[in-house]
Length: 94
Image (cartoon, rainbow, N blue to C red; front, side, top):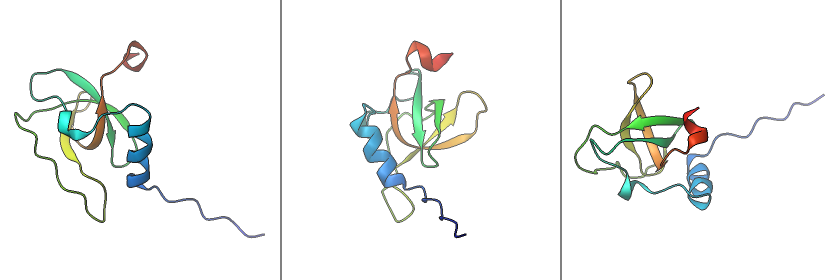
């Protein structure tokens, strides 16, 4: 019996799907002091985060992933590679 190899995660495809479903591009990501927001990470996770920067300077797209920037996780304080963002709704905070 042959096994089917699982489909590899494609960050470019994930970003396109997120943008089509209402996520925002990094050009408008909130800056330091503007609050907490949800981010879609390069690894495909959705996390509550905040920005510690006062300017927007995303890293350009390359072979490893689309344009991305670093933000801090609200829960753990770890750095996250965000490629899209949106404001949380009441369901997201629970």
